[in-house]
Image (cartoon, rainbow, N blue to C red; front, top):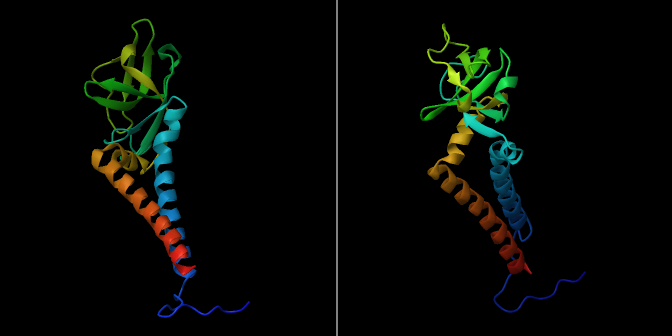
Length: 177
């Protein structure tokens, strides 16, 4: 292959393939990191489950603070003693273990694993969100970030930076030709 002479005043760019490739890799890794970190908050919702962040230590050490819990809908009368349920209590969602399912009364008696006594108030069936299927430590904090307005803005900006790196790689390749 022969080297063609360049027009007057132009010279061959150094790193004509390395820098675009590096920009492309960095951009792709940034976009993939945004997608992968969103998956724990999106996938459970696609199958009809809810996800919540644990903000208190009432279920520690079983479910530590900052955990993400996935809650699947269940019929209240099928909940057994020992199951961990999520329920609505005023303005918050609580996850506690069922100590008694009072089917006739339509209520649960619950207790946090770290608490000494059962909860003062029984949980009516209508407040039940579902059963905690599993939990992932530390991912609850990620959920909090992605559900806040600032977190959404950061995720979009970070993904846009990845896209810009990919666009830059394409432009650098065009320029090198």
